[in-house]
Image (cartoon, rainbow, N blue to C red):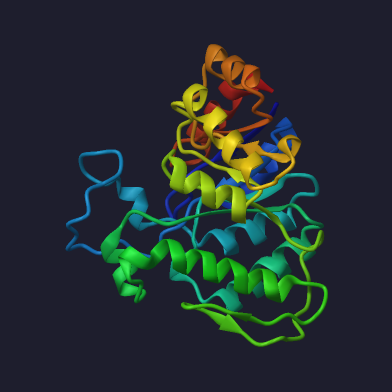
Length: 275
């Protein structure tokens, strides 16, 4: 099982270059970074974990800039987002950023994407909340059209692009794409249609839901052996990771604290037992 890590990297935490070097030196498989452009102060949307929203949510670094720094100081470490709020992006600009990062890193990028939870943040980007899943689908289709080997037209209800010359291309034609979202038939149908796998936060309920996801995957005509489920932001125990392995999970992303270097490195040393 590949063991990667994630952290809310901010202007107050360990730097992405330092964390990336330490992860690669220790043998971790990858670094995934979350995204929020901003957190509106006047917010009625509840925090997903309940209670007050932690301070780091409003301070996190842009994941693509931080991952570019991480790519520049490593050679093997996987680089990913967990997750990109795709509805909030101009897909043409984002397609270029992703293709450039993947090209320059030698194909190490994974696009973890999702629909978001913060209505006020999305509203400031002009996102119609009830349409965000369809917006994500159109944005992803635009990016795939720009990554295609030949100029490709895409017309959608929420985003379109003319057949265009667009280079560089991602190293493998397109990065690995993992779709997040709460377990359920609707999300699994979209995973099977649009992605290479599912990136569930925390990993709870995998025993119940993985067979449902596999059924949706096969119903969509996808090769059963290609489905990937990557539990994200996991607080590990030996029993938990052994259970994931028994379920066929091949990669897990462990949660690091949003802290300065000494605390983060102590946590990495604790997690080294799982490598």
